[in-house]
Length: 159
Length: 453
Ligand SMILES: Cc1cc2nc3c(=O)[nH]c(=O)nc-3n(C[C@H](O)[C@H](O)[C@H](O)COP(=O)(O)O)c2cc1C
Ligand code: SF4
Ligand code: FES
Image (cartoon, rainbow over all chains, first blue to last red; front, side, top):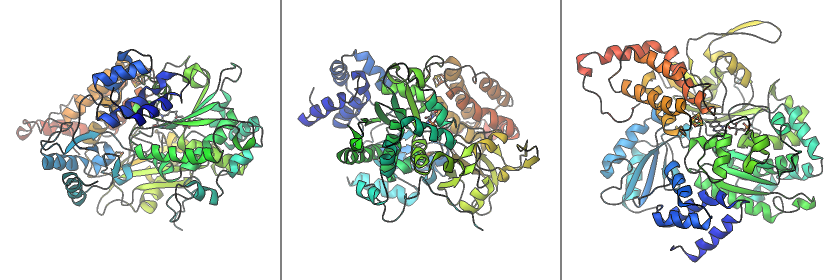
C-alpha cells in the first residue's frame, strides 16, 4: 500500500510497543486515516496482514469506532459537540447555522468540498460550550461571532 | 468569608509562567516524589495509599488502596497499570486540564503507582478526541525518558517500566475499564463479564491489571509526598483529599474548581464560586456527577442521620460536595461533573438529549441496554417533537426499569438512571408535554430530526 517511507517506519515502531501485535490495530488505523483521509478496503486488508489478522478483525473496528470513516471528507473536519451542557448553551443553533453557511447536511461533504460537519458527543470541554473541533483544534464558547470566524477560516483555507 | 479553593492537583495549572516543559516541572520540584518513592519498599507505598483513604476519581469512588490489594501478585504473570484518560462522561472536563496543562504531574503519578504495584508496563488510554493531549503526553514522555524518569533502570533503582500512549477512537464505552482493556487489545470495546474478568486478576492480556483515572493517579503522587496519614486529614473521613469539580450549564462562571472533599456545599459552589445563575433565573435541576447520575430537583428535601445519630434535613443547596453526602441525597458524586439547569430548561428536551447520547454509545452486547437505550431515545425524542402521549411517562419508566441490574456493565444503570430520575421528579412536565401535543397546532410535528434545546 502507498504510504510514505517515514510512515512505514513509524508503523513498525508502533507495533513493537505492544506485547501482542493485535493491540496495534487502533494506532495503525489512526496513522493510515491521517495519511489517506479515510480507511479504504485496501487499507483494511493491508493492516490485517501487517498484524497477522483477518480483514474482518479490522473492518469490525472501523464500523464500531465513530472516529474511523470509510469515505473521504471535506478539506476541513468540523466536529460540533451535541451533548447536554453544550446544547443548554446553544449547540444546536450553532450546528444549524454552520450547515446553512456551508449548504450541507451532517456527515456529508459541502458542495464546494470545503468541509464536513459532524455532530459529535461530549468533547470534555463542557464548561466552555458550545465547543467544536476544527480538525485537531478545540474552539470554545462558540457564539455568532465565533461561528462567522470559523466560516471565514474554512472558506479562506486558513489554518 | 468567600470560599477558598484548595488546589493540590491543579496547583500550577493556569499559573502565568507554568508550561508543560520538563524544565518547568523540575523547577517546581517535579519528580522528587518519584525519587523518594524509588527508595521505599513497594508494599509500604501501597500501605500509604491504603492509609490515605483515597477513592477513585473516575466515577465509582472505589478505594484505590483496596483495588491495588486485589491485584493477583501470586500468579507470576506481569502486572499492568492503565491510566484511564478516556474522559467521556458528559459534564466532565477535569482530566483534560491535567493532560493538557500539567502532563508531567500525571507521568510522575503513574510512575510512582507503577513502582508501588511493581507494574511491568503502563498504558495511558486517551480518548481519540484529545489529539493535542496525546501529542503533549508523547513529548513529555520523550523528555522524561531522556532524564531516566521513565524506561529502564529508572534513576539507577533497578526498576524498569515504560509508558505507552494509546489513543481511543470516539467510543464512550472505552471508559468502562474492561471495555477499555478489550480496546487496548485491539478489539471492539465490549465490556467483559465480572466475575470472572476482574481486571485485578484477569485484565489486560489476561494478566493482573490496575485501571485508574487520571486524577486518581495524580493524587497518588501527593499521597506519597505528604504521607497517607496527612492526606487522610484533608477533606472528611472516608471522603479524603480534594476533588476537581467540573461545572457546566446555566451558571455565570462555569469551569473547573478544586476543593477539599465536603468543604463546600452545592449552594456555595453555584452561588459564590460560579457566580450564580443568569440574571432573573432560578435553579431548576442539577445533575451532580456526570450525565449518568440521578438528577436533583430544586425544592427537594433530603433527610439523613450523621454518624453520631443527629438527624438533618438538606435542601439542594445544602448538600456538601463529597461522595457520601451525594449518596444521602439519592444520587452519586460520580466523575465530579456538575451540570446546572435553570428554569428556562425543558426537562423533556434535556432528557431527550441525554438519551440520544446513551442510545449512540451503548455497545450493543446486552439486549436490555441496546434495545432499552434506543427506545428511551425514540420515546423522549418523539415527545420533544410535539408528539407526546400521556402514557409516555409510564412507558419510559417501564423501559428504564428493565435495564439496570440485567446487563454486563454499569452502562446499564448509567443509561437508566437519567430516565428514571427525570420522569419521577418532573412527571408533571412529561404529562404537560402530552397535553400540549394534543392541541390542534401541535399535530404537525416539529422538524423530525434530533431534539433541540
Ligand atoms: C459506562 C462507563 C464509562 C466510564 N467512563 C470512564 C471514563 O471516561 N474515565 C474514567 O476514568 N472512568 C470511567 N469509568 C469508570 C471506570 O470503569 C473505572 O471504574 C475507573 O477508571 C477506575 O478508576 P478509579 O478507581 O481511579 O476511579 C466508566 C465506567 C462506566 C461503567
Ligand atoms: S450494559 Fe450496555 S454498554 Fe454495557 S456491555 Fe451491555 S450493552 Fe454494552
Ligand atoms: S457537553 Fe459539549 S463538551 Fe461536554
